Each structure stands twice: as C-alpha cells, then as structure tokens.
Length: 180
Picture (cartoon, rainbow, N blue to C red):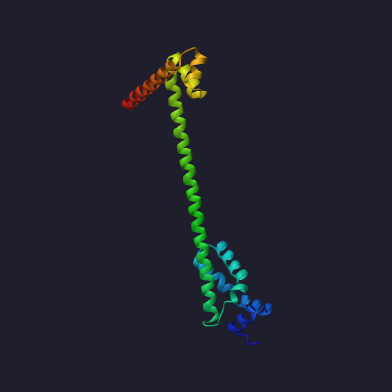
C-alpha cells in the first residue's frame, strides 16, 4: 500500500484500521491546531479534535480524492469548529435569555410584592366594614351574595361597599402619586 494520505484515506474508508491510525498519527496535531485557532480555547479545541477523530471514519467514506487529503481535512475541522462556535453562541444566548427571564421574574416578583405591600397598607386605612367586605370578597373569593349572607347584609350593600373600596384605593393611589 502506498503511504500517501489519499491512499491511506481510501483504505481507512474501507475499514483498514492501520491506515486510519497512520492518518490520525500524521494529522492529529494539525486537527488540534486548526481547531484551536478557530475556537481559541484549548479545552474546547481538544473536544473538537476528539469529535473530528470520532467522526472521521464515517466522514472518510465521503472523501473522493478530488482535493488533497489535508485540504479536505481542513474543511472537516473548520466545519466542526464552526459548529462548536454556533453551539457555544446558542448556549450563551440560552443562558443569557434564561438569566434575563430570571431577572424579569425577580423584577416582577419585587413589583408584585411592592403592590401587595401598598395594598395591605391601604386596606388598613379603610373602615372596619369595608376591610371585612374586602377580606370576604377578594380574600376568600366569595360572591357578593355569599359575603352578604355572612355579614348579614344585602348583596347590593356588598356591591356598594366594593365600589367604595375601589374609589378609596384610587384616591389613595392618586394622593401618593402626587407626593411621589
């Protein structure tokens, strides 16, 4: 068997392990070097080099010998490096997006907590009757009719009280906004 790269690649594609070993021995440093230059990170370049070596037996079946083996191999390594960079960029976007989502959730949670704190403070400024009505209608999610039964009042009175609560909360919010 001729020891040139093209012949070794053809034989390796047919399953000749010795030919494959000789190709890897001859070109592994080149594979790593190109991967490192594309990726710029030693550990990731080693990963890409290993991926190329693992995929090489199957890829060799597509080697036609139209170009020099080294030219073909450069393309294989460059493509693997580009794929790695795309995966890394996608992972960074996902991580960044996840972080952004978490920040938004935290901001939303903080905003909700601030709104609930404001609402609790505002409710303490209501009369006992209105606070009781809010506790049943909003807190316990009772219908106006059921809250009326519990308080011994008509459904209409409960509706009127809830209307008064809304008016009072709007007025409090407007006052606070004026002084903020």
